[in-house]
Length: 386
Image 1 (cartoon, rainbow, N blue to C red):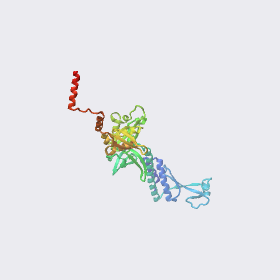
Image 2 (image 1 turned 60 degrees about the horizontal axis):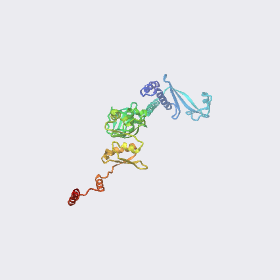
Image 3 (image 1 turned 180 degrees about the horizontal axis):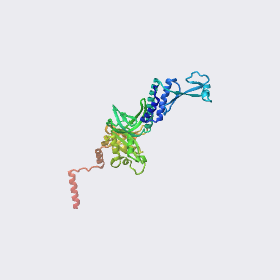
Image 4 (image 1 turned 135 degrees about the vertical axis):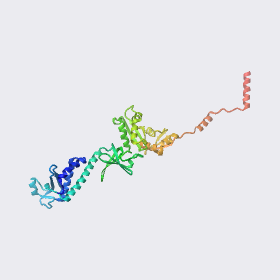
């Protein structure tokens, strides 16, 4: 006998334990494989065959489905009404009857077929279990171990599955090496030819939100909330926060006493990434002003209609701060508010010109000539003498 069923039973339990699969699932896979082997040795390729296996004795029973007909044309797929009624008294034409066949052994080719089917089905079952387990974790932060770095892709071990972190999901300037322990955000689970592909991220805005959620318990209670996040991973993040409870300072809540909360987040993403926490405001002028922090804004003018645009006037000495290095500050403020922001220097009239105008209007006293001064003095003496 080329296929030892009893040995299969022992292997079944070992596989179930090793792969962390339910024993019933593994048994079902082996029974499907034996059905394929039966078709190979005893039946037809298109036959509908069901196989059961007794885990205690190793006995295998096959059940071949056949359609009840008046006159049999193909005995592999059909059974006569007379024969069917000997097995089932109320059988009628068009019914399906399962013919029982006891299987004593399988040939070498059938055994090889069974083994291939078992391996394939086991991989599929393992993938499905991984998919089901990790699909529930999409949108959460999980622990990972860097397994290897391949060019722009970092492969991480998530426990029961492998994940990949593409270049676009990495933190700019962050170094990765095998054995490194990281927190990652599970973005998606994709089905692929080689099984489930878990996409993880450290550069996403969701990663920042989850890190703050772990540090700010007031988020769970609903006292404070994050309204918007704009991020350039590894460089700068802007966070717009709001309080739903009167008297609660949202910025102070997220920063924490002596900066403990924001520092805990920064220690995870790297000290090189700066975090600006600003107050969200439903008044767009105030919101844009806050978003451009630490810039001192003089005036915000919202353009009418769509698309959303605004012109922001700032003192000339604040222009470079408002724009930021490489346009970073205004770019993040724009992402945060959803407005296209045009920064311009505040126009101030020249103070010297104004001073000259004022002098002309008031009128400066004119200097008198020497003779005029002398005459005035003589007149004053004469008046005094009289």
